[in-house]
Image 1 (spheres, rainbow, N blue to C red):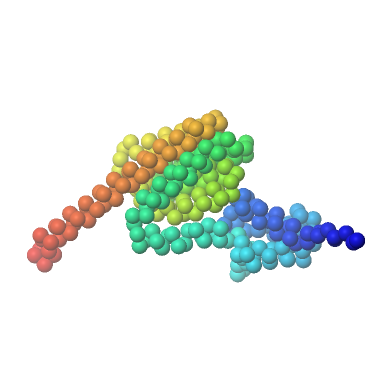
Image 2: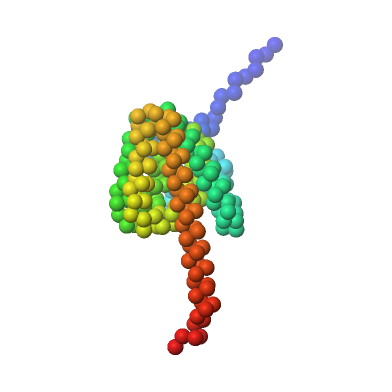
Length: 259
């Protein structure tokens, strides 16, 4: 009776799996350019034809794409498949923002808890860098920089969970909320204590993760999102009142009645 032959993986399959794992874990992020072909082939110890075949496998899955002018780049497929339809729905149904914030509270609370349990020294270094950059941004007046630094900090927490789904869902969720985050930070700039409160909330999340206190990390993350939810709701109510007042003013004193 003949023995079944062992299935030896193709070299290109092994290389493709390794690159795919880097994308899943966030070592290679959307928009990142893959290292030059020569470097990658040397790193994996494979021929350049085998490397090209591996990259083609990833391209067929939509994980990477070649760009005009040279280079192969990581796509945002893992995030955009979640992000794109919900972005359209958010525009048509503003009430979904509350559901989104509720989901974000659950996700970021769990992320902070697991980050406190699982973060490596390298993760803590990245988190410290993101935290420092965020504090520096919050001390300035550039609203886009503030929003981007805020997002980068929360994304660093998500990636420190070492859960691929949380890492990519966090990225998609934060992209989906980017406009809301920027709007909220803009509204809070007018409140003297708000920036200080936000910085202290982020500091509490950071400290609890560094000190390996999972329950405290979850509580700090949830407290932060509760504050964001309430201030965003207040901001939206204020904006609605301003619009109503402007309409009443226009109705009482139409432009044609002014000299």
